[in-house]
Length: 494
Image (cartoon, rainbow, N blue to C red; front, side, top):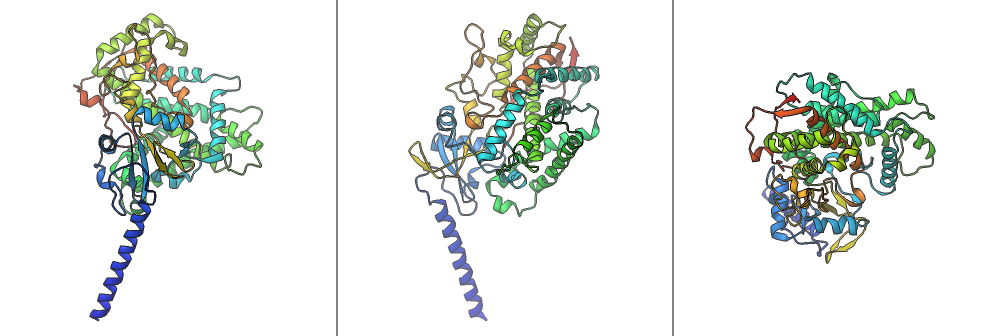
């Protein structure tokens, strides 16, 4: 009996050692990867990431290992790029080599490579071309996207006025505002601010972003082989995505029942037309499965990021009323109070333009960027990076690069103003990423931020009972996305 037990123990030890050795060997198979902390079997570099401080942990590792280094998410090597010049060299100068989308285990199991944002190869290229063209030429002679945003801005002002200067949390209202623009493009219609069912849907978006940024969500992306089997809040993602899929599938069905190819009303109708033209499509870019998954990605990307940026902007204005006063002066001088702001006004409003850019830079809504991956085996910065290696071009390090921004950790509109008070561009300003994978909705997002922000300040003075500190307005930098602290404010008609 004792001999059998001893033999079993020895067998278990031998199998364990073999597993550890094979895992370790796999980690170091590519000896010429950039330097980084020594990983452990199974968990990789997990111990080098402070709980709830992923962005800060990556920034601290930069100080030790330089602008390019390697972490291990489990047994999987991940190359991290920090600082604008390093990100530029990879995504712009060597854009073709780094143009694939990297793995995001938290959501990959739901999308499985479908959709413009998470797809790769020919499928991704076709969807991206189609989406860019549809957004650019949307309407086929009907209302322009700018007119849709201006209309939504008017609905927003009326909604804010209805609260009669009472103190409110703007999260839900701004979420509805941003999502209604996307809804008008994707589905051809908007939703009323009092629509309870739609508000529940927007709360799902918020929860998805919160779960992805949570400690459990971060661990899931780093060691999915373990976290897939560990109970926790990250397991709720499946339920949330099923609800999103149910919503967009119903919208697709509504369009199918009333579809007229000679009169396309929205993105879905344009997709139907393209799908009928691509019957021999072997990539699945315009398949029935691709449409709802593409809609979810565009919907989420175009809602939460705009809403979060606007909330950051309002919070910052409450902290700096002197900046708000200067904005009021420029808005009154250029636009006045009798017409809606237009995108043409932006070129005449350098201070407003600079403030909005600085809000984007400072709030840094997606500090980690979305992961890229190498298309082929490459040599980069003297290192060998194998095909399919995940690459993280960290936006935080570019947007806070002291070589480009004099006070990177302070809110300072002068980062985007020259000595004459004219607006100036900064190369390191890349909140939408850059290169082949730059956000397809960048132009739309910029238009929304300018028109919504100026319309709010054209009509209201912002006040709060809260005593805000520098720490209150600073981004949390906890994980995938940055959301501002919960706050309340009053909108006082001007």
